[in-house]
Amino acid sequence: MQIKPGFAMRKIAGSNIVVPVGAASSDFNGMITLNDTGAFLWNCFLQPTTEAQVVEALMHEYEVERQRAAADVAHFAALLRENDLLAE
Image (cartoon, rainbow, N blue to C red; front, side, top):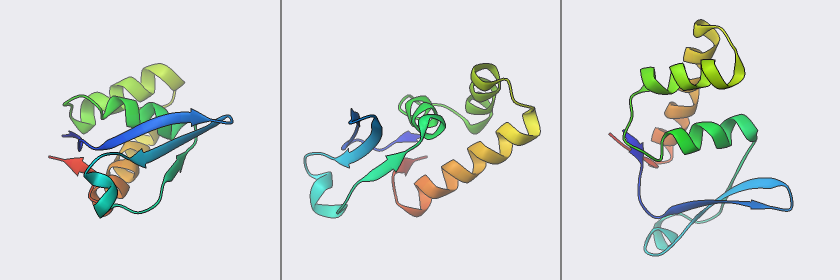
């Protein structure tokens, strides 16, 4: 799974902002603001990966327990799916 093409994250005035680019801008109106953890997860999902791999990366980066990391990754992935931003 990975983020669908047509979206870019930029740091604007200290905020992590995801915006549609190119053809995606006609299908997705608006922008998404991510906190630093969300930005980290977004970057993990830019490459083909699995939820398990992202859980490992989150545990390593933020030194959190597996259960917490798994719940956070599952929630983030669900939000990406709900907004049709994730290719599986």
